[in-house]
Length: 277
Image (cartoon, rainbow, N blue to C red; front, side):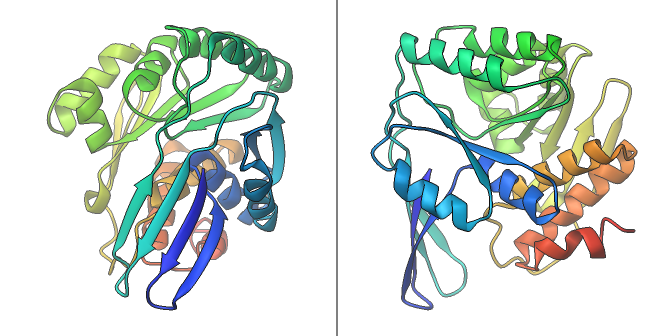
């Protein structure tokens, strides 16, 4: 996603590379973890997005499929109020989805971590995500899906390693209400295969593992701008998994990283200030 942000406080207009998965890659690179961001190679705004992404210090991998990029115009007020205007998700035909599958089957290797985050382009054949996730897991790829709707359901049915969503996304996908009912629905869909992370905003988050739950309350802070905090949580989760930390430590510190982002603290320093605890 290519974002154009109008800041009313500074009267500045800035372009940036957006998208949940790219934000995760940016944060992991802050923490000295090599992460790659992907983009379809032939969209009309590819060069602009690529220039912004390179300024973030993230390596780019191009998928050889022509598709128009999703765009976001953000209006940011003097007290961090934010209004976003999005273009619709792009559409890809069956031939394009076949090329995308071939690309990922070729590029991803055993031991890689693959993050699928945010909304997906439309038009995929039913079961496409489910089949790809199953095949990549057989090849030894660890997969985290942070999404909603049909993509989230297919990830659960495929037995993905991790699913992550916020409570609104879980309620909208499951047609259930409340934390317990949503977690039960997610677990029923996943069986015992997947680990589930449900974020609750000011109330913290809950991780539902195959054998237990871990609940973490959010640190009470003055929220300035929560934009991207969920992506920082995802990056913290991946960081802990790669380091082989206990799940209790990983979930607690991922929550702390997301909280610091919402307070607009320097999240690049979280590894020293929090992850070392």
